[in-house]
Every structure is written in C-alpha cells, then in structure tokens.
Image 1 (cartoon, helix red, strand yellow):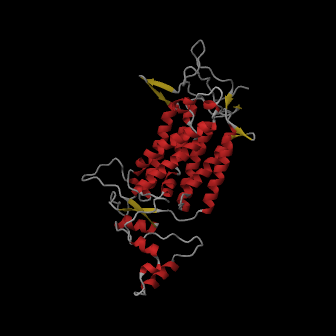
Image 2 (tube, rainbow, N blue to C red):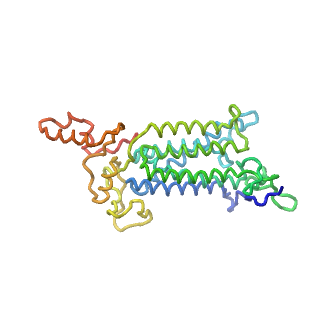
Image 3 (cartoon, rainbow, N blue to C red):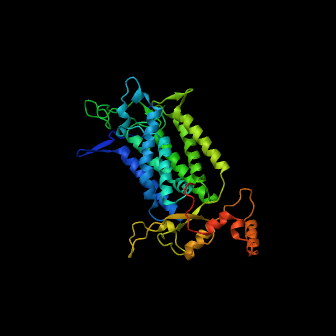
Length: 387
C-alpha cells in the first residue's frame, strides 16, 4: 500500500560559501548551544549569579564537550579507526561526523566544573541551571541528523514515515542523483527517530521546568531528573534505530549505557536531599541587584548603562531563599550563611534556640560552641568551590 503522507528529507546538508563549507549539522549544534546558554543564563541569574557567567562556563564546557563526544565515539567504534582497514588519523576528522552524546555530557560537565571553580560557583548550581537547557539543545541538534539522512529507524507505513536519500560517499553532504538529476531515495519509508528524540527531549525540558518550580530542586537533583528523563527516552528510541552499532548480549551498546546512566541518576535523585541553593557575591560587587519587584532573570545582557562597568565578584556564598529575597530587596548582605536543613526533618527552630542559649552566656567563647559557624561569620570566603 502506498502511504498517504510522508516526511521529506533534505537532499543537501553542506553548502559552499566560497571555499568554506557550511554544514547543517554544525549549524544545528551551534543553535542548540545558543539555546542552552540563554536558558542557563536566565536560571543562573534567578539564583543570584552575576550576568554573563554562562559565557565563561561555555568557554570551557563547549570545547571539552566536543572532545568528550569524539572520544566516546572513537572508543565505542574502534574498528573504524584501528581495525584491519582502519585509519587512525581519521579519529581526528571530527568534521566527517561521529559524536557521542554520552561523551559530550561527561566532557561538558568536566569543563563546566572547571569554570565553576574559577567563578566560585557551586557546581550543583550550574548543573541544575543547565538541566532544562541541555535537552532543548539536544532537540535542536537532532535536526542535524535529519539533514544528514542518518540515524533513522526501521521501515514503516505510518503517515509520518521518513523519506531517506541515498547519500553520495564521494560527495559528502549531498544525495546521489539519477541521470535526470533527481535525488535518489531509499525504498520505502522509515521511522524518524531523530524526530522522536527531539520531541522527547522537549518533553524532558518541560518536565524539569515544571517539577523544579514545584519541588524547588537543589543539590544537582534537577540535573539528575534531566538525566533520568533523557535516558528513559533514549532507551526505547535506541532500540528502534537500524544504523550500524556495536552490540553486547544482543543489544546495542547505547541501550546498555542508557540503562546504567538512568540507574545512577535515579540513585542520586533518591539519596541526595537539600534545599535549592541561592548565591550572593563575595568580594568585588557584581551588577547591582534589581529592586523588590524586579526579577534578576530579566536584566538585559545587551543593555549598556552609563558609568563604569560592574566587575564580576570574586566568588559566591550560599544562602537560603529567604536571605536571597531579602538581599534582592535591600542589597544588604546577610550576616549569617544559610544553614542546611537536617535530613531527618528537624525544624530549624532547634538550632535557633541553641544559638540563643549560646548568646545568653557571654563568658563562653563563640568559637568553642561551633568553630564552623565562626568561620562562616567571617563572610570573607566564597562558597565551597569543590561542591
């Protein structure tokens, strides 16, 4: 039976701008990075980070993410480069394709961790801010596979079945053409797994945004939620794909990877507890905080106000949400850092009462009661940059 409808595929994925090739896949990756940066910038500023910090993070995270993605691809497909007919130098030919999302996330996380240490931002804050932006970036990036006519599923007669071109191995990025100059199609229609994954990733981003707003997730739990959502979708989508891949016990390698990563993220999400972290600057003051009715997320990065440009702070100190809101309204730095709520559910009133009792004994030095609290009162050190 002839399908009533079908999704077309582009017959060209590379355009020449003089001597420079413009690749659709690279454009999709770049657009995805921009989307992730915009979302992450907004969320970082909602948590008190100075404007523009996401650019400092991206300078590290993007290159290390690309390197990690390539390393994962080479390690999991070694026969293409180190097999009997392999070409080892091709392992560096990243422009010819071959990136693994698992390596991209791991490499990008390493780069973001390095940047967070330099900026004095707890890494968990960066990860949670990135959580909804990363799946949106992945959704945009998947359309690069559509341009390349790759990573599709099995045959289907569904109305959204995908037309796939036979690509020319001697002219990468272009479809083979018949004698009349028409691009040649593979017989039949195929599951558009790129589209399934793109739509799933958008759903994951919405899920993270909704649950994060409702549950006030912190300590990296929003990022763990993203990982669980993404890997759950990748598991079943990977089972549909028909492109060449290494197998373990009859299943594609990435199916096993998705299952293991999902399990690790689930354990982290269940075991780790704690309130959402908010930050106030330590050292050189950052851009002034908006007044009470303002939202730090809506300050225009492109706006250039008169006067000297604000300097990024030396670091940040973690505070509670109440302290952060008060800091937004008054600009006054709170005297005490935020105290983490005990995991056993004990109310903060107990610690407050103990502190009141300590003050009632003027002869007892405060340092002997709680040395860690005495260090925090100094207010001169940034938050733990290794967190």
